[in-house]
Every structure is written in structure tokens, then in C-alpha cells.
Image (tube, rainbow, N blue to C red; front, side, top):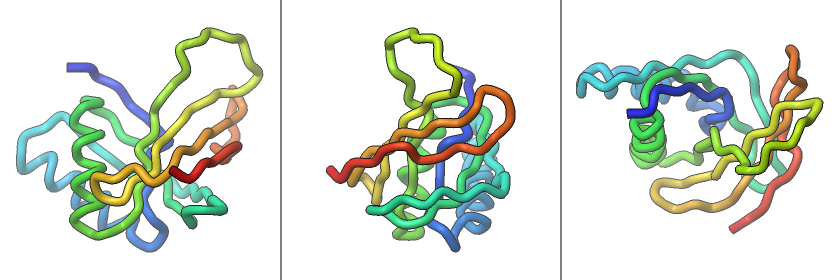
Length: 129
């Protein structure tokens, strides 16, 4: 089990609160190590719409499975973030990558960037699948 966290997971705007509550209830019901919470940031994409970002702590595998389940449950688009590049290059900002999903299907990819200290995540690149 890999214990981790991420701030670049997202839920289609307007569904954030109910989806995060459902994620936490589902994890608690199945006794899984996972807790999610909204932190008041939104990102807007050209191709996929606006998403409410949420952070989570727990098991990475559980988080990835639950994000697919919540997408199916509410029939919404979600961002499965937390992907990093393998290259180790010193940068002045944090980099992260994510997949946009609708249920089991990956419908696109996003690149995120944020200042190393403070600041908010921004979508720097996106691609339709």
C-alpha cells in the first residue's frame, strides 16, 4: 500500500460537495484508508469545463478506484491527478499531470503548474483523447 496525497484531483463544478461526501462515506463503509476534502479552488479547461479541486490523503490505489466510481455514480467528469514525470529537473514551480475521466473512459489529459511556495494550481496544457 502506498500512502500518499494529491491536490490535483477534481470533480465537475456543481457536484463537488456531494461527490466528496460520497467518497468519504464509501471509504468509511469499506474501511479504506482515504479522506477527501474540497479546498476552495477551481480550474477551468477549454475542452472539459470547470472543476472543483479536492485534496485527499490515504492510499493511492484506493483514490484512483474511488474517483472512477464517483464519476460513474454521479455521471460526471472527474480529474484523476497526481501523475509526475520521471525526469528530475529543477524547476521554479511544481508540476503535476492528470487524466480527465468520464466513468471508465479517459477523455483527455491535463498538465498543472503551481508556484513552489503558495499559489494556486493552474492548467498549463490540455489535450483531448
